[in-house]
Amino acid sequence: MRWWAKCAVVVAALILLAAAWLAWEAGRLPGTDEIRHQLFTQRAPRGQGTWVPLWAVSPKLQSAVVLWEDPAFFHHSGLDYSEIARAARMDLRAGSYRRGASTITQQVAKNLFLTSEKTMTRKIREAILAKRIERALSKDEILTVYLNIAEWGNGIVGAEAASQRYFGKAAIDLNWAEAAMLAGILPNPQLWNPCIDPSRAKQARHAVLTKLLNSQSISWQEFQDADAAPHGSCHDFAVPGLDNKR
Image (cartoon, rainbow, N blue to C red):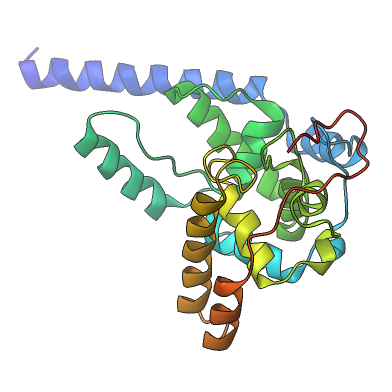
């Protein structure tokens, strides 16, 4: 057998092994029925928070979060392949894992079903689950779940708890400045937390507002008003067990 034929056999064997491993991994993960059952029969966020329907979250916060976290959310089927390619190029240039490419759906998969370990195996499981979540739930349902399980620092889970904590109001009542502040916290709740570093949090808010302006989601006047608004403060609110120290 010639060398190229031997190479072809080896490659084919590796492909078959990879396919078998993927099928085995997929079989171990929750199916669409189990996903839907788990997400909508156990509506209790981890940590401290309050589950609210999508209509109880300000459309401004919904827009800011989607634009900042996953601009292609309403167009992809769980995975954003262009963002994956961009992240891969950045990681290759850096020689290490620097940039994630997780969609909102992938974050739901990770937060509810997986660990936070940065391994290829976990990312593959996350991708499989994201596809299944997209088949099990509508986009509005996925966004509802995400907004209720997202972590906003200080033990706060969910948009309602975050709104009460940082602004002393219900999530439905958030304005553009407040919505941009909360969206800016999401990538790193400790780094961009206004209770920890108000100046850095305002920088994140400015970046979100700039993206909203560039996408024509807000007017120039709305941008100016929101960018000049106070950053808010940390308010006490009645969620048992929450650490309300300022």
